[in-house]
Image (cartoon, rainbow, N blue to C red; front, side, top):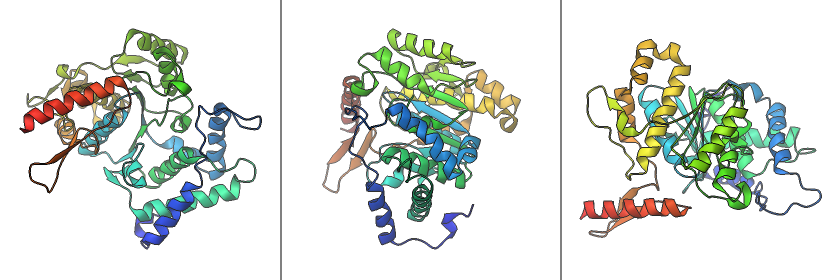
Amino acid sequence: MADPMEEEEVTDDEYRAALEALQSTISGKTRAAPKGPNDLTWEQQFDRLHLYLERLGMTESVNAMSYIHVAGTKGKGSTCAFVDACLRRAGTRTGLYTSPHLVDIRERYRIDGQPVSKTTFTRNFWWLHGKLRETCEADLGMPAYFRFLTLLGFRIFAERAVDAVVLEVGLGGRLDATNVIRSPAVCGVTSLGLDHVEVLGDTVGKIAREKAGIFKPRCPAITSPQVPEAMEALDRVAAEVDGCSLTTARPLREWRTLSGDPIRLGLAGKHQELNAALAIELMRAWTRRTAPVWGADAVARLDAGTLPETWATGLAETEWFGRAQVVPDDVEDLSWYLDGAHTEESMRHVAEWFCGADVAGR
């Protein structure tokens, strides 16, 4: 495929036109909305993703990529950011797909840590939009907003020939658009809690089963420590999937660097230790599956609990805008403290981070 970065740059008007066309894919319906007699179930809509890929001619390219797939209630974005930063420091060419975005839609697609250019986004958007109109609109219809964005991500990452795709689940897992991938290198589950109960279920166990829907045959799965109800559900799903081994990430304190220096994290807050620990285990599993590239010695050191210096540097350099972020203002002695939360436990973590950061900054 031609590299769109080498083509003539698009104008701001062309970029805005793509954004306007994207808005037309927003249906206004949620997964929890009552279904009419002619509405497809969410299972049927998910199944259509395979048809979209087939008609777009993308099935082979999508399934040829190497994925680190991450679901969970809290910390998905931070965990993915840690993984991406460490792999890049180790020389891996990465694609990072996350949601939602804060300011610009292109934040969802990062190549080697940087949001894709307006040209890359716009050229690939119109290619995808045109092919869908040509091959799918008459009988399948256009995919809804998040599914369209996910297909666009696959197109961009395949075109840019990344070595690894760090793929964050949008909502749930089992029926999420990202789960159309056939065989990820490793799956991860961050801390679980009650979220989107109208869609995923009203207990932690039900929610855990939906998140564990990303587990695949002969694919290692790793989870952050969970409450017993969630852990039991994850174990049950893993046992139902052929060759899926589920393990719990070891605490961050059990890892060390080659130099003996303490591990530092670029994201503040005690809860980020859980996310970083899961990120390390995900990278370790990914490394084991790409051992010919890394060599037996590197894998052995990881198994012994020793971090490569590149990973330690990546953890320390990780940034995730809008997460534990302090932004100084032009006004003297004024700073903005930015973070986000959508569960009670997450709100407590935000409060703890703010109190600690405020005291440290005085």
